[in-house]
Image 1 (cartoon, rainbow, N blue to C red):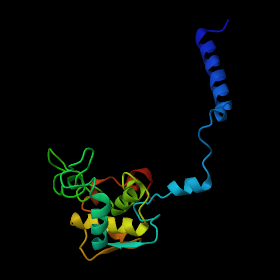
Image 2: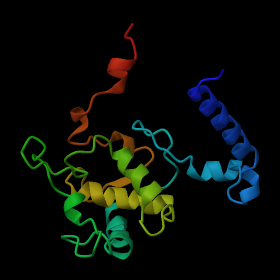
Image 3: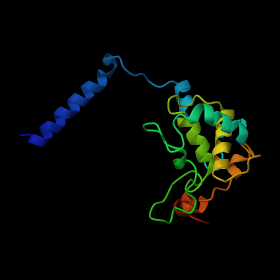
Image 4: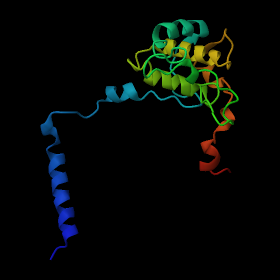
Length: 182
């Protein structure tokens, strides 16, 4: 005689198999196409691998920020769900305090992470709608606002990975503990 748990497991296997076989009947979803996958395969590594062609200056970024980003990133975050500039700028020296402020300039270990995040997720209402030049410009502007780069710096695939972030040593280098040293 079969145990109660064996019967339950068998019943679940039959139901799961039936549900998987009939999945197409619901009319939702489809297998991702190569172009759909490519549209989201836009990651940028810390060393700059994956950065696209393009360029942007601090001055260009300031204009784009005012036109595209300030609606959510107002001083003090005046709108509901808005993240004010205080989450983007400032916070240097606060990480070892009782109230650390984790901003781009105080916390983020690499500048390429900023580019990747803006490119992938901003603006909130229209992710991936910015051109590569706009993303480079916004990255330059925010790095400048955090005192990481000067106002005359132009960011591109060559210069961005060379930016030295203030908290670059605040994270464990994964290679140090995952990869055996010769």
